Image 1: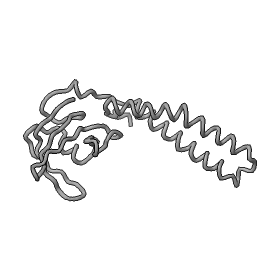
Image 2 (image 1 turned 45 degrees about the vertical axis):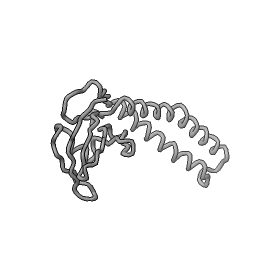
Image 3 (image 1 turned 120 degrees about the vertical axis):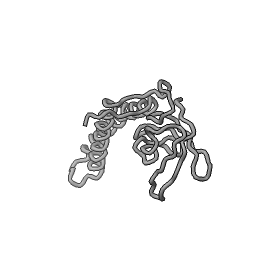
Image 4 (image 1 turned 180 degrees about the horizontal axis):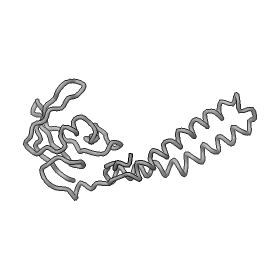
Length: 157
């Protein structure tokens, strides 16, 4: 499982910041909570101790997950790309079936935010777009049925 994990610099920076926070703030605070709960005596009926140990497990799991993603990160700078083919990092202008314009940037799995116009490269719409050129009509199978879009512009910003 040494696959590269594509992401933009912004996404990489966010994951690195979360990792730093977990290691420098969350981990020490949960260790302190465990120590404090231990001081209360009998651990078998100590809810604070069990909650803190569970929290510690979540923190350590997330740290491992983030370290793995960051070590396999392939940071892509969209401004270094060009062309009229949809690739990771591209900002794509689509015309939907109602002649409405929709704009999406194709981003990493952890960077998706539809409200901000960022869709994961793993999403159905991104998978339908990647590799296609301007002027092509694509069909996207969504939970709500099939949708059709025409690729009107591909930008790298």
